[in-house]
Image 1 (cartoon, rainbow, N blue to C red):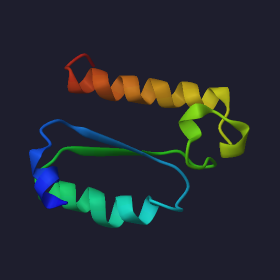
Image 2: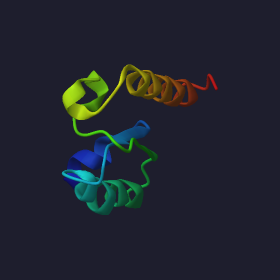
Image 3: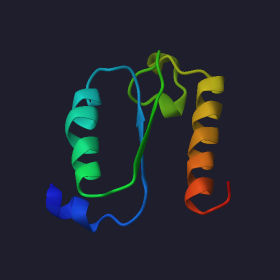
Image 4: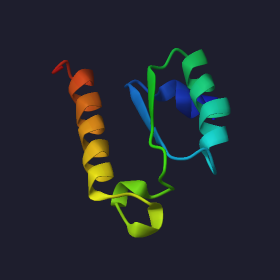
Length: 85
């Protein structure tokens, strides 16, 4: 895993839902390891929704407002990376 992580040369954004599934892997393994390699990592947490929340389906608990928030957050991240903040 470290080998491919070393090759990453851009900022990383992790979008995370309720603390289930990949939450532990992301926050206890992946993000700390990336940071230890000097990678720029940002994470955003979206409470109340489950995996696949970005599609805004009823099953995930996401609403149109949730999806709009996510899109704005991702756009802000990309804009900041490109120096457009």
